[in-house]
Image (cartoon, rainbow, N blue to C red; front, side, top):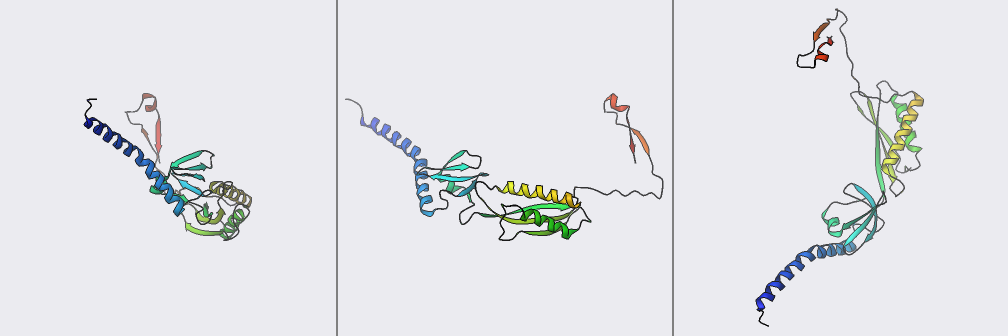
Length: 222
């Protein structure tokens, strides 16, 4: 037909290169899927965290893995991404997590009673495990507060969220402290005045680069 064979060679070579580049990711994801199925770093039903999102593995396919987040939307993640990036599997061995809640009380508070009330707030929560037993540590003498920290374990499921459990514990701690008259500390500073001599009071005008309405105002420097 008068068409040189070199034309078919060029077209075939370009087509082969395009197919090779296009299938590179497909083959990579397929091989990654085989690795996931053989090594089983995660499996269907596991609770995982990836890119600050937590969810349950619903399906592991040949090319991608589907994860249902706790907000009830689906993430379809290429299998190669699961192997190349860090994925936290909360239920690889078991689904028990240790959590903590910190609170500071005002200086002069009865520290033993503070510890007992924090333990009471933790133990009353039904989502918190009895074993290992919760504990409360007196961690530090802070700048404005006596610092305590409660440690406890929960069993992570789709219906038990760590942040919700921690929030419930804080609500209960605040309630128990109010009933006992214990003040939760807040940042504060002490100012000491020398009253052995009169205080010097000066009245000065505001800087001239401010608006005319503000220039008429005065400030008192102690």
